[in-house]
Length: 327
Image (cartoon, rainbow, N blue to C red; front, side, top):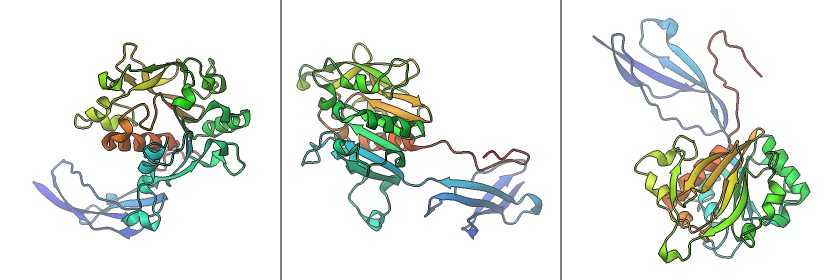
C-alpha cells in the first residue's frame, strides 16, 4: 500500500508551498524545494509533515548558513585601456558583469564583491588586506612586494583568506630567474608561493601548436564542474601557449597538469595555516593562453576557484540530540 503525505517547509517561520509525497510501506521519498534567501547569515529551516497520524515526529529543524558575498581584492599588475588587453579585464567581467535586472539593484553577481587596485596601492593604509576573503595578485612585479606587503599577505592568508597568484611577463622577467622566488618562496614552506618557479616555457609558434590540460583532479571542488563529459573538453582543449615551469612543495597539491613532456603543473594549491594559496602558472588574460576567451571555460573555472578560495571553515550549526555544542 502507498500513503500520500504532504510536506511543507518553513523558512525563518514563513510557511512555503507544500508538496505531495507518495510513499510505499517501509519506503522513502525525496522532495526538492527551491529556496530563495534574500539575506546572508544563519536561517532557520523547518520541514513539516502536514497530514501524518503520528505527530511526535512531524517536525525536522535545520540551520542553513548563507554566506555573504565573497570580498575579492584584485591587484592588476598590467592594466590596459582595452578589456581584451588588460591583465584582469576578463576576470573583472566575470566577477562583475554588466548590471542588468537584479544586479542593477546592487545585488553582487554570483555572490562576488570585487575591488580592483593597482600594485602600487598594495602598501597603502587604505588597502586592508585582512578585510578580504580572496586576494588576487595578477602578474604583479616583485618590486611591489615589499617586506611590509608580504607580511600583510602572510597574515591575511594565515587567518583564512585565499590567495590566487597568476603570472605573466611582469613575473617572468628574463624567463630564467624569478624575483618571486626570493620574495614569496621558502623551501621550508613558510613562504606563500606553493612552488618554486624554474623557467619559462613557450611554443615556437602559435600556429604550429600549443599545450593543453592533460589531467586534472576531478574530485576537487575547484575542478569538479569539468568532470562531466559534457564540460571536460572546455578545460582539456583550451590552448596554453606559454607557462612557467615550477617545482611544487611536497605538501602542495597539483590540481591540473599540462601535456608537455614533463607534465608541468598549471594549477597548484597549498594550505597556508588557515588559508589556501593557488598558483596559476599561465596568464589570466589572453597573452599566454586562449582560455580567458572561452566563456564556457573561464566563467565556471574562476567562479569555482574564487568561491572555494574564499570559503572559510565554519562550525556545523546542526546537531543531533546529545552532541556537544563547540564554540
